[in-house]
Amino acid sequence: QVQLVESGGGLVQSGGSLRLSCAASKSVLDFVVMGWYRQAPGNKREAVAVITHGGNTNYADSVKGRFTVSRDNAKNVLYLQMNNLRPEATAVYSCNAQRFVDNDPVSAWGQGTQVTVSS
Image (cartoon, rainbow, N blue to C red; front, side):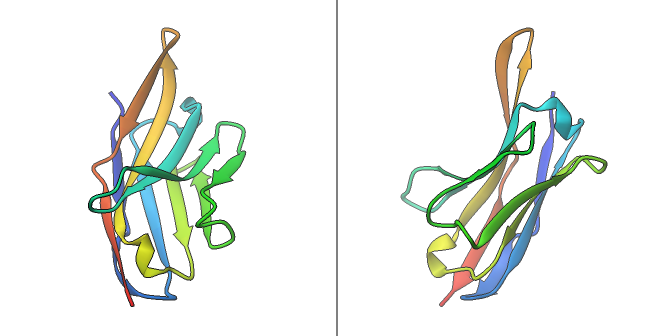
C-alpha cells in the first residue's frame, strides 16, 4: 500500500508563491507517473501538472510558465512550485501516483492540502 502525504499548502496573497510537497512511502521511481491535481468547491478535479518516470512533464494551460513540477528521487518527494499565484488557483491540491502491480494499473492519492489565494 502506497502512502502519499502532502504538505505546504496555506494562505497566500495574489502574486505570491507556495511550494507543495508530496512524500511517498516508496521510491518515486517505482511510479509510471506522478502528478498534482486540484479541486475547487463546485468544480471537478483537474490535472495541474504531471511528471513521468522518465522525467517528462506536462502542465495545464492555466499554469504553464508559473508552476513547476519536480521530484527528489533520493528523498522520494514530489514537488509543485507555484509562482505568481492567482485567486482562481484556490483549491485542494492532491498528489497522485500511478504504478503497475502484476500488470494492473494502481493509483494512489494523498489526503490533499488546501491552497487559498487572496486577491
